[in-house]
Image (tube, rainbow, N blue to C red; front, side, top):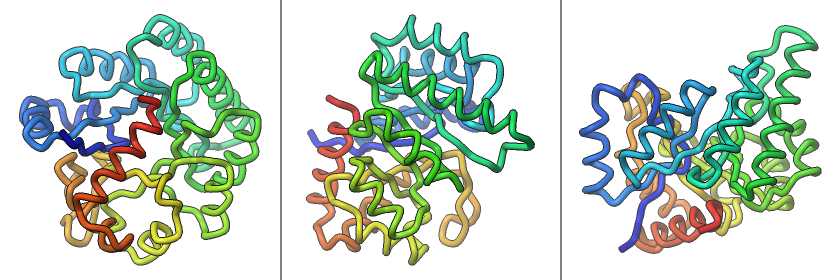
Length: 251
């Protein structure tokens, strides 16, 4: 059986809670597995609970740069206590959008580096947030293993994309690619073995999605678009993405 994978979605976000039974049933019918990323300790606990109920949910726990705070020790303990059942660590990374001063920057970096160390300790893949901070992420990651690291929602330049490929990162593209020429161009220049797809739901998408929250059911459409850009059949693209995602996850 061939599986579709959403490499980055916030299924444990409250936006999905009322429809969760329907979402999980849809994943079962469509053969979709989801890398469910988390924002903070509370949300990570919700992710673990959701994954415990359904094996189509692949749990990633971590601290988003927006939430870089004093919960780091709790998160380290949570990873220590659950490393046997988590699929990865994320969403982690850097983002100056959430920084007000030098202390905020230092805190973000400390949280990011500490969780990267935990990922290496337990040999777990990481899902990285790198908005407006790709060069800083590259610099930090020279000290860590990048072979199972995903730069989710890749939004860099062609030069930064080449840097990501040279360093062995995976990169993922989402529903925006369906209507954004710049994302289509980036995809066309990405090493085929490093391409993943995602929704990053419940982020909302414009154009053909009419500002609706991202749904995991969008994944086949993203794959279809990617197949046209790469020049593959839909089935071949699906097989490639399944292989890539399993490589990212180390399974």
